[in-house]
Image (cartoon, rainbow, N blue to C red; front, side, top):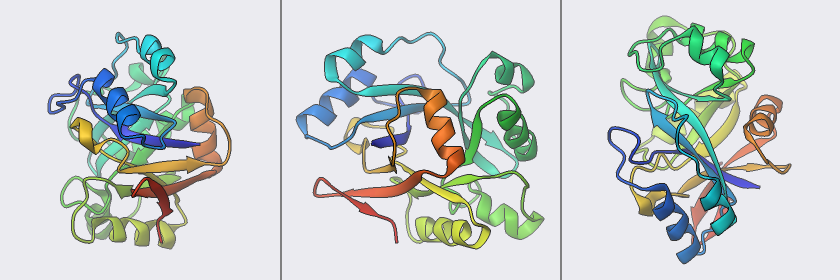
Length: 216
């Protein structure tokens, strides 16, 4: 099963894509994508209901969040009321240690994203301040990365033994599905997604001419 685990809609402050338009683009371009996760910036969207779009387009649409920590940006999967009560998703400079530990305690998982990116990725912070305990998965393929950012993320994952995932980091319609994550088992809901990420049953892949290529 192939899911794009990092995308933004107009709910995010810098997102320019409507979720329906993402679905239309995937269908029109015949992108071999089974679903995507909306990781809105500094918030969790608990009001939007995308089930009608799931039924209409036959695609899984899940919701998560992207928060800002002292080690860079982090995707939080499995957001629930307990986790939302622990820290303010809108705060800038959250403790990565807190986000990782509390996400795990509350049944979710925190995944540092685009770690090779300057200032908002964890690689540079690790060099300056050391590693953070408890990280299990990082995003090693990001559709918006430039230069050696994805290579640096992959090197970090290989060095520390992190599991690897991918996402487009799309903010506009045409970027959805550039990078994604391949799972060995079917994903039906967020609990199942979190379980497979924790298990490490995930692989970062990149779309080239409508064919998924594993990151090497």
